[in-house]
Image (tube, rainbow, N blue to C red; front, side, top):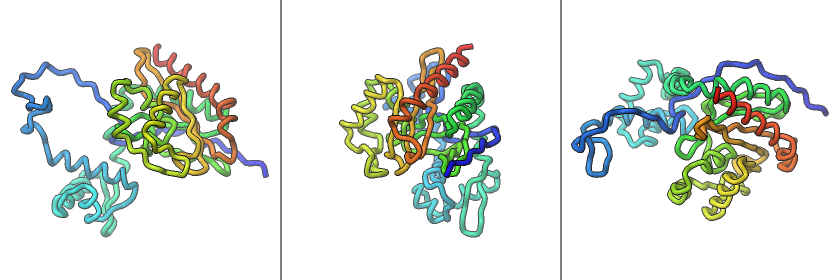
Amino acid sequence: MAEKTKKSESQELRAPAKLVGRTDLTTAAPKRSDKSEHGSLNPRDYVSSLARGLEVLCAFNRTRRKMTLSEVAAETGNTRAGARRILLTLVREGYAVADGKLFDLTPQVLELGFSVLSSKGVWDIARPFIDHLSDEIQESVSAAVLDKFDVVYVTGAQYHRVISVGIIVGGRFPAAQTATGRVLLSAQPEEAWTRMIQSVPLDAMTDRTVTDPVEFRRILENVRDQGWCLVDQELEVGLTSIAVPVYKSTGEVVGAINVGVPSMRMTPKVMVEIILPKLQETVANISRALRR
């Protein structure tokens, strides 16, 4: 039976707190006494209570579910009393809600990271191009940035079909098993690759997932050389995706654009032949728009 299609109405999308993996700060050169012997900030400048609060926020992002007080304490290494104080503070400030014994984050947490992202303006500029590509290929298109060893989706256009790939802005997935993640990892300085590959989790998400570090390095080299990446059912059975990096005028990679398609609808060969050229053209148009 022919699939029915319906394009969703464009919406302003926002991204969550742990969105930007790198922040450039311009400060006066610190005196030697301002640093510890390891070159880090003086321990007196470290606010441990803030760090524990941020860890609680990240715990919800890792689990992607509501949690009890005991679960939050166990996930973060806090005491129950400490976790309770943090959770009640988040509730009072509007960043969390309590439903009986369960705690959950509210959409207000999106404001923490979106102000940084929107100030860059990259994804505001990219969004019309993403919408156009989604209309043209009649598939969902998304954009993601790298946060340590995860990718975080920052915007996207979802094309609704009977069977479609859902896009959740703020969604976080392991970089090593995704096309966007491999594109962004391959863009890192090569001198950092050895340590990066030793640290990145190569967990088997499906029976197709590459878990060997040597093979994974070869994949990153190939992605870097060809300028795009296709992942076939390594993150989830039935999902094939292809991604291309987005460059600023400085040559810096700011993120990646991805097209995800159910594998029953399109083979990897067809994605490379049909989707990749349109995706590359879209990314080139975004990069040109960023230079204006």
